[in-house]
Length: 341
Figure (tube, rainbow, N blue to C red):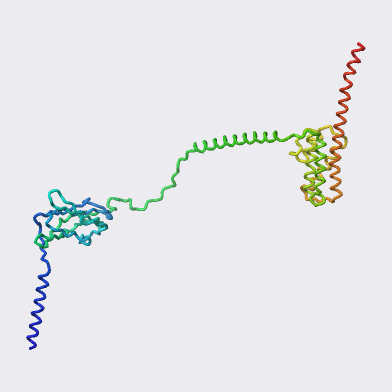
């Protein structure tokens, strides 16, 4: 009984194996098939390591034959597939179909290599599967160092490269800048002169202007507020400006010593030079040496400034009277002299 069961199992297994074998399509590998042409090519027969090599397989067959495109994982020997473009189909005028498959290959192994024959499968009109091998292609891969010679050796460092400098543009730019500065200074000076000339001129006598400024300064009560430096700055400016106008001096731009030296060269009323010297030197102590005078002394200096203005005014008026008197006497003397003749 057990033997019968074993025989049945073996028979069933054989029948199943036969069914599976019958279900698998039959594949026939041949060198050539009527109506099919396979051409393989590369864009370079020699390449350097790392170069990208274009490998193309062009298959032309009848329209009744079905092509199974080559797989991207096909065995291509020592080459790696970097890119892949499969089954670009073109219908020819004679009714056949042309398919083109492109591989982009690369390798980093030097020497003589062969792209192995790639198997291409076709399904024939009778449903038979046939495989036809593409032509193997030899390629030589060269090293980048083959023709380098001694260039791979480390060479000594070269000295710093000296660039030839062209200074002409700098000269041109410098000259243009100087011209612009000169033009700018000319325009600014012209504008400043116009501004000065456009300012109204006070035609009153210089002592009237000075007395008015002294009165305004007193009304500001800078001494009472403890602003001694500001008070003396304005007080000396009034005196200097007044003397400069009366004696035609640029008094405000001079130091105290320069101003006093210039005054000493002029014909002044008696004692005026000493008064001005004492007044200005004391004012310099307050303005520049941080000396703080008491209120009484500040009032005395204010009165001294007032007296300086008045002394110069009186001297000027006396000289004017003398000149006027002399001018009136000259016609009388001329007339008297003419009568006696």
